[in-house]
Length: 78
Image 1: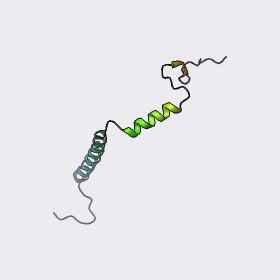
Image 2: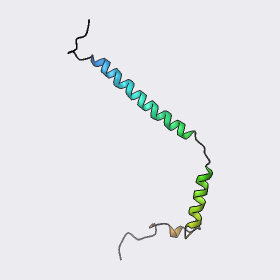
Image 3: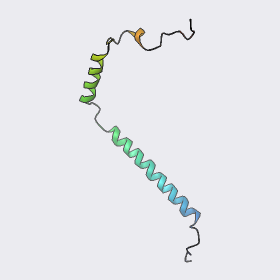
């Protein structure tokens, strides 16, 4: 059963290649996400950046909920 050059490969071979390729891609992405999740939970640089943003913000008190965006704006124009 030698295959000639003008014949197409069997459908099951093509389907098997597609399934294996999809499994490799999905597994690779899953592994990369897992590795990213295993990183450090605490980052001093991130904490320093948060403190700088808090220091630079004009309303540094987080208890004042009325200063948050447009949450208190009326949907009807006056």
